[in-house]
Image 1 (cartoon, rainbow, N blue to C red):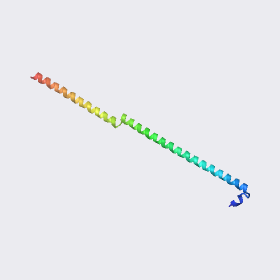
Image 2 (cartoon, rainbow, N blue to C red):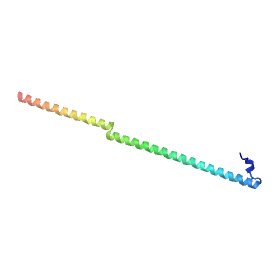
Image 3 (cartoon, one colour):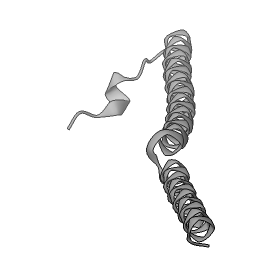
Image 4 (tube, rainbow, N blue to C red):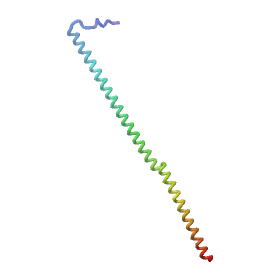
Length: 108
């Protein structure tokens, strides 16, 4: 193990220069760490924003799919089928009523 005391400068000017160099290295390292933290925060915000956009687009797509193919569309289709069946029943009833009326009129 190397004795750190032996590697220290013996005069005051050299010690002062060494302290200044160490301080500059520490400040540079702290600045890099702060920049890395800032970059990470920005990346997380961008990812969060992207996730929100993706969720919004998925929701809009689901709404459009429901409009085209989904529950509401199927419900409208069922209602349309029911109305068509009611119309056919009403037309058949009207036709039967006309036939009965004609039979009654010709039979009497």
